[in-house]
Length: 181
Image (cartoon, rainbow, N blue to C red; front, side, top):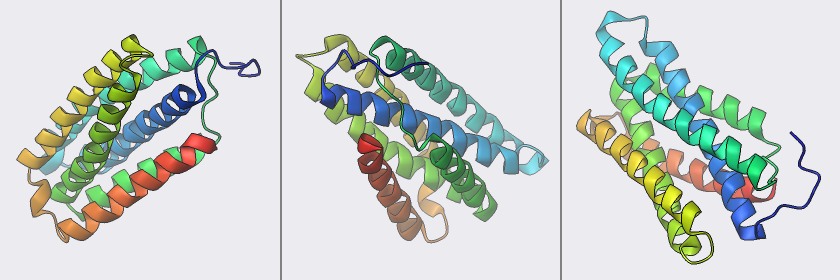
């Protein structure tokens, strides 16, 4: 992939695509980390299965952003290795705490991301309507993931408020950093 030529979208849209690509990459890594802990234990196999389904949806989002980065000639973030490490590590860590902590992680991440997609859909409605529609579609998937996490005990996780607030703060920081790096 070559990103030497100037992007064919506005700087704001370039940043959106870069952030969303990195976010979906991180989401896939989180789910993979959680599954690495849960999939070999018969007691957590059903949780691993749910996580696998959500990972597959996130992978579809990532594939769409992979394609959009190329089509729009937008460079990905230079921090992909860091987001992979951080995402996978967060997935493993929350899964090692408990299933409910893993769900709390999903709920926190998806709450930030669905808001993010909603804001992006509004901002691009008039300038990039197809992209706005994509953001709306992906937002619905993220809301679905969040709801699954809540239904499976996210709010019952040990130190839920602390865990959730730390993860949300990390997501907001990652968004800001990825816009420029």
